[in-house]
Length: 138
Image 1: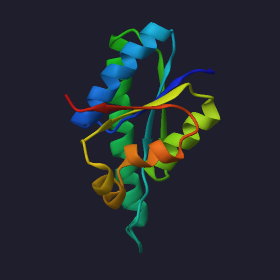
Image 2: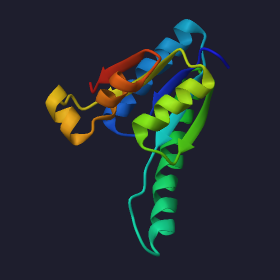
Image 3: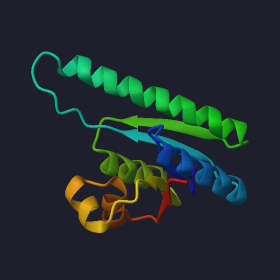
């Protein structure tokens, strides 16, 4: 559906704040939400498949949690659990779906710390071709 809201969600408190904002916007705009969880597995050797499956299971649980919260708010939602770096996954999902915006939470890192440590919000602000709403943890 064109005009969807892509929500980056991992179940953390800052992601829950972003979910609340995305739900409010979805209701106001009559939009649906795509709950996206991106992950990249850096393991090597025989344990890589087990590690990837474990991380994907975390993403599946987080996405299911978000679906339940959004349904309770009266918002239609779908999920996208993507084996790709989180910022790259969110940008790709937004572009593929023709999203109107991406909504993510933040821990409140400054720009230097975010750039050095790999803040997803910081990367999105520089990579995304659609608007990005960064919601601080409440």
